[in-house]
Image 1 (tube, rainbow, N blue to C red):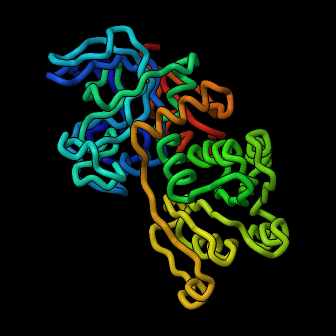
Image 2: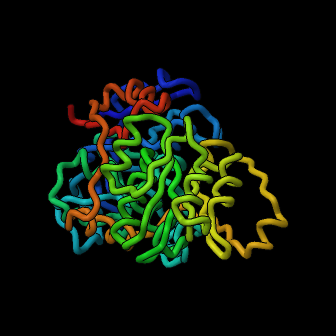
Length: 343
């Protein structure tokens, strides 16, 4: 099969389109024909060696895919060859941890394309319990935008943030993949949504997704704008996917007794905040990573019903993986970049 492989850490040009062995499904596993694979910013960090260098090289990245069952391993029941599926973007490698809650806190949990070879390939072996049926009816390139942002967004907004109808919610970096999903999810839950952007085209996308307040941080203070929007009260929930110095500002924009959910570090892996002001205001800071198969199924149902739409920026063949990574790394995408392994 063909795959996008890298043999050393570095810039986007380390990704090469090569022939590699096609996996055979082991007992209890399925072989998925990858029809489309999405790119997440995490994979840029992994390729550069910023997250870890304890990856056996050569390596194939990727956690997001839409595909169909190509073969069944021994003992697999309830799935059929040709059935459209979405592999979970992360799951425990030890089957003994499959009922762990939250799933992403399981000791053997691994995001796809880190410990094992990922979705930047024509075929992918996955344990049968970690694929979700794709009933959206959408093209594979649209579905491939969803897995990581869906399980991350549902976990952060619905479970950890506890967003409910009538809440005022701040979602940072509204044009980013997870944020663009989270805006739509919060709106589907009945919340009022504010978001931040740093470009005119990103502002338009955020409005199209349903954001009630869009703050362009190039010329506006988002804390002041959010406080004005909430009549000085602050938001009930802030979803912060940026970290770094932005985290304190997200806390400042949150009401007394409100919740700040942290789930990203694009602005920096270290942050400081004003401890006294934080606990005097009875605020809560919660961390989260990714959700489980039920969260992915829930998200796909919302997509099927039309309440959430995939945000697809562009599609490239897998043979142009280096160019696709360069686009994501340079923040040139509005939404998700997807690659097609069979073009």
